[in-house]
Image (cartoon, rainbow, N blue to C red; front, side, top):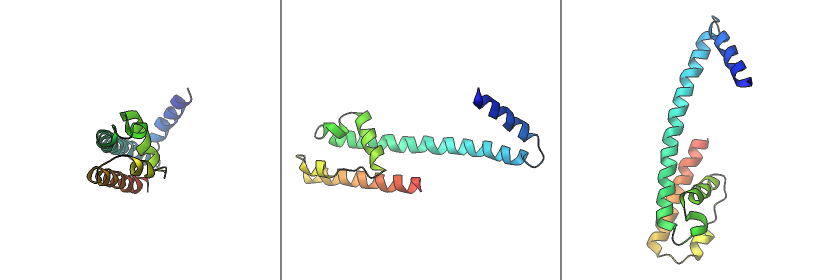
Length: 115
């Protein structure tokens, strides 16, 4: 009920000579924001699937299925990365460095987006 009230106020402000262009610009920006988040979601899912298929069998507690891999990557954006679990796992050096690289690239991209 509260949201519909604010939408009515926005429609009323759109009729104003000084507020009308600003309201129209906000609606155009909302469309761009939705497009941005759709692209970011696709990038996020790509990194989740990459790490799940690479580390899912070795570290199932963090990358066993898409949900836990997504939670691990999301928490990684806020500094909750635990690289010691990957060091303790029985991984070949190639797979280990690939997983490090994927996580570091994701953290850099995610940090730049959060700025």
